[in-house]
Length: 428
Ligand SMILES: *Cc1c(COP(=O)(O)O)cnc(C)c1O
Image (cartoon, rainbow, N blue to C red; front, side, top):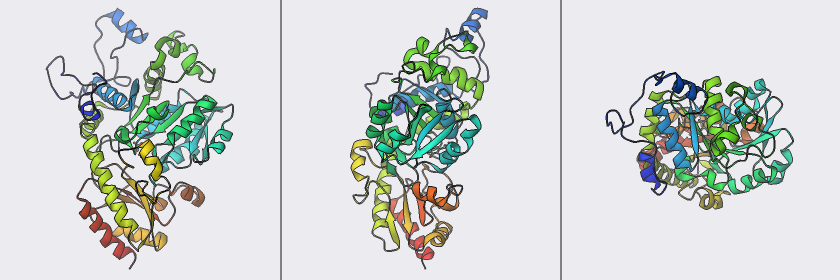
């Protein structure tokens, strides 16, 4: 697949070719666990990573491989690895970089589940995270120490739709010689290409816009292929001999594909956070219409945000696509096709009014999800960000008087009418 095709073409064709056995035009669901070796030499070459091929579906599967190539192409990376969820992708992204005692620097503005994963769960591996306001570049740089192994942020960040200045953040990452990992879930490669702004790795929850219709969970890690894993001696999993593969050095052997090969040959092999072929099929179907959906998501979000901003029952709206947003200037630079479809607004009447609002919507679904064709609403402070302290909630943009919207692709007038009637009940 040549890179000269446009996005709309690549989202349908990248990675897929008619099935060589049957001519099937749509990518078949290869529902198989194992693959027959040609002979004993073939098996040995595959197990030694001397030949690329299929062994066992915990590591590789042809349906999943098409999705991996498609996501890598859309993001402008050299390779991608899919896994069972977005959270699995985050662990898989950190796994080759980290070790006991090592830390990452993460933005305060993150998906609530990611804050919990980074502030609590990764401690069980001996890893830790320091949370910093990524608008404060000096604080970011000052937080880096000898044990820091990565910098992590979201391009369009949960829950407020805050836009990260990826150029500035990658500038700091380059200066301190660390990889920058960007969660591009809320933007998708249609709105933002973090690799163009200096990201080393891009992670996705494919559960959201890439699949697009709330059917399956999945994740992906895309490698830019641009980071020198051997330069600092800080990434021995990639630069030093790997005992499980007869002392093979991933970076020396696979060059820019070192991270991708390691994620399959060691990460998926031993952590087992594998995407199943049925899940990959749903996501492949979804990606075919990504640009069309994102255009409508963005257009609807802009209309709804403008309407809310002018409503007297609303205190403020955080949508970065509004000229009133402090991040409006970053839209042009970071995501010129639009500021996404995820934002929050504050309801006059505080926590109780927010709870009444989510109980009063009819078209909106009150769910812990985003990036669905359907419009979704959630009161973060009582749900996704419930585990956080009030200071963490406020820093994350999930204050008690705030609800988060994920604007769907229904008729904008219907979305607005539903919010209108629900706000009437919430603030009565
Ligand atoms: C949903 C989400 C995740 C977690 O993904 P899962 O597929 O639910 O595990 C991570 N980051 C962001 C930005 C998300 O929206």
